[in-house]
Image (tube, rainbow, N blue to C red):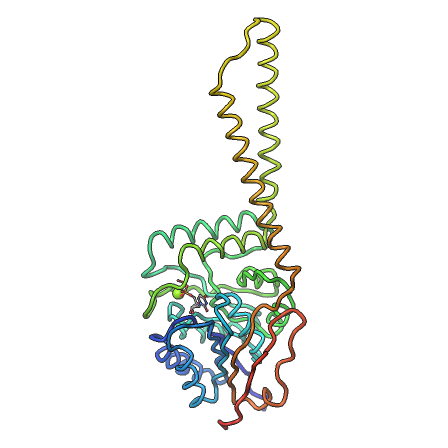
Length: 339
Ligand code: UDP
Ligand code: MG
């Protein structure tokens, strides 16, 4: 008999104490039906509530659980990246902790993966329990990014998906610090398929993506996958130069042939103000890219692990080798207690 496949499920956790027990129960119920071995990699992303102690308890009584705690809050995408470095599965599932992504859908993901797909991603047909503002901005965001990038990033998807081992390995090799994971998965390619689902309301707690974080997330996505904003300055510059030329020609003509100097403080002021703001805007756009180059070049690890709990024997023999580009397990510890 062929050895059983291992499926890893990665769950980023930031202040999710209310949902963790139910999440774990539903994940376990689903995974145990699938005829494969599984591990659930919980990544505590600097929670300030009881999340970590709940995860420690889960790990102590369930040998399927690997629990990692980052040294502070690094953000959703980096928490998922930390989980990816840890996951040993032949297939790897990304899922949010808040039960907005129904764990039961993993069954369909695994079926697709068994059919030979490298990626099966959840496609949000409906989003329940989210504000109009979130829905509108999300819809706009996915459509803009699709327009501006050469990579085919499907609209209305999240990170909820399954990826094959080879996709995971490519993802781990990508050295970028600003990680827009769903875009990176599209970039990797191979055979990908959508699995439609209805996105539920949060089971408990509040969104960990307030407006400022959403803006940062969108900016990271845009700058990682498109240079169109940079070309915007060129386009605007050419248009402004054209208008300026016509305006100047008219001014000279008036001066030479009708002798009248154009008066008007107002027109001058408006022009100067307009050009000034256009220039600042263009500078800001360039700054966004330069800042990201700077952060990339500093080459700091993506995350730092504070604690690491597993009962997996292979992890005890050989701790994950620190990848050239990413997190190092500074104070990692592994407990050989459970079977
Ligand atoms: N999350 C995280 N670190 C953060 C913010 C969020 O690990 O800094 C996790 C969070 O616990 C959840 C997932 O990322 O499991 C998605 O966050 P959330 O549900 O708040 O986002 P939304 O669904 O509102 O977009
Ligand atoms: Mg959510």
